[in-house]
Amino acid sequence: MAAQQGIKQRIKSVTNTKQITKAMQLVAASKLRKAQEAALGPKDYIAVGTKMLEKLSSASEAHYHPFFAKRNGKKALIIAISSDRGLAGAYNSNVLRAIAKYTLNSGVDQPVIGIGKYIAQHVARTTQLNEVLAYMTDTENPDVAIIQPVLSEAIDQFVSGKVDSVQLISTTFTSIVKQDVLVTQLLPIAPPTVPVSSNTTYEPEVDQLLDFVLKRLLEAQLMQALLEAKAAEQAARMLAMKNATDNASDLIADLTLAYNNARQAAITQELAEITAGAEAANG
Image (cartoon, rainbow, N blue to C red; front, side, top):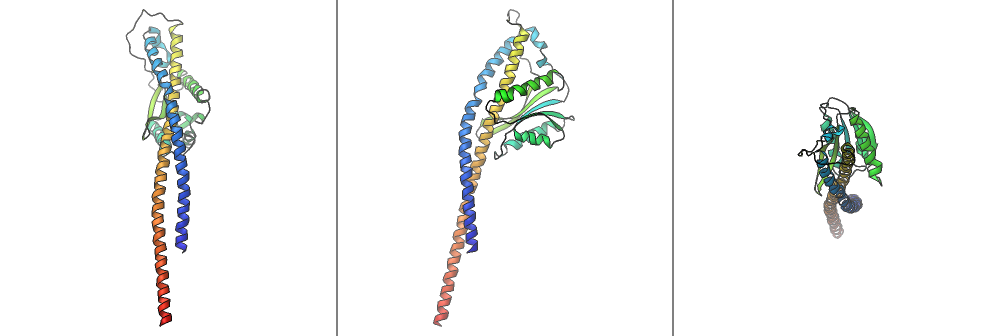
C-alpha cells in the first residue's frame, strides 16, 4: 500500500510539472512568432544602407574613415548577447562556450559588453574578461536603452585605440530547430570594393555622409543581432519545454504501469491471504 501511495504521489507531481512545461511551451511559441516578425524589420534597412555605402566608398575620402582602420593587435571589445532567463536548452551555454573559445588563445584580457544576465554572470567569474557595460535584454525600447549606448561605447573604444577590433557574439535564428552562434566583426569595417567614380557630387561632404551611414548601419546590425537572438531564445525554450513535456508524458506512462502492477500484486496477495484464511477455517 505504501508503495502505491508513493507512486501515486509521483504521478501527481510529474503531472503538475507537465502542465507547467506545456504552458511555458505555448508561451514561448507565441513569443517566437512575434520575435520572428520583429527580426525581419532591420533587414531591408541594412540592404539599402549597404548599397548606399557602396556608392559612398567610391569617393577617395572614404578610405580614410577611422572605421576602416585595420590593426594587427589582438585586443578586442566583445559584445555578447545572451538571455536573462534560463530553461532555454543550450542557448546560453552555447554563447558562453563561443566566448571562451574566442578568448582562449588571445593572450590578453578582453573587455566585454554583456547584453543579458548570463553574460554578466560569466564575466564575473572569468578572470580573463573585464566587464565594460552590462544590460538586460528585456527592455521596452532596446534601441535607446541598449543599442545606442553600446554602439557609442564600442565606437569610442575603437577610435581611441583602446581596442583593435569590435566583435559581436550572438545567436542567429535560422529556423525553429536550428540556431547558430556566430562571431561577427563590427569594427573595423571592410570597405566595399567598387569601381571608383569621380563624377558624383555629394551634399553634404562625403565624410559626413559616410559617418552617418556607417553608424546607422552598425546600429541596424546590432539591432538585427539582438532581435534574432531573442527569436533564437524563444525557439530554444519552446523546444526545451516540448522535450520536457514529452519526457513527463513518458514518465507518467511508466509510473502508471508501475502503479497498476503494484496494485495488481497487492490484490493478488490479498486474494491469496483470503483463500489461505478460508482454507484454514474450513480445516
